[in-house]
Image: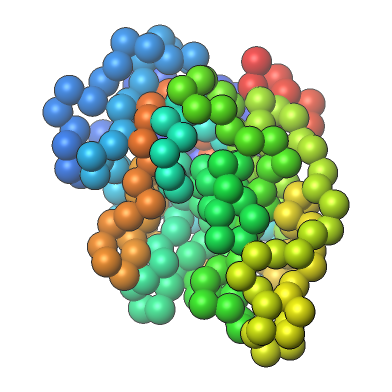
Length: 246
């Protein structure tokens, strides 16, 4: 499995980089199966990778017009919300969210879909109790199959992709938004693309793979295999994503 931050659309490097700290249950985690190198890492039972904020370097992508792409090859078990990778911390100092790729965020219309999250402040989205600012693919992520998932952000719109394919969603009523200040009847918006012109904050999160920090501790554990993860400091185009997804 490879990890990298770069701007050119090259495949991620093969081989684990040793600056990530392995957390919880990493014994026998390597699997002789994967779409890139023939290998992958097994996540589940609390396993995740962590890189301290001070060491994130080029992965610390932020700014008012800054783009980002997070792309991964995953084999998800389909059981629950799973965090794939990014700078995303939902609890410390009220939240240090920045950017992150998830599978299945059901609270705001993202169940079983590719979800790409961006935050300016790191905090929940007013007036709601959680961050609502994520794109969600129209396609569902199949369980127990290798699939390339990705999201892009160009400083204005987030877009979620499955196997390099973007499908737009029509404006819809977002669940769990009725009755909040300014939204007596709920919020109506499109989840793909998702309009968010505020930009990304420099919020000080660790870079994690496979889990994020919640109030109760590490959670949103990804269950399944990750065969590669790539971070780009711009929004890749459709043709680039399709080429990488092959």
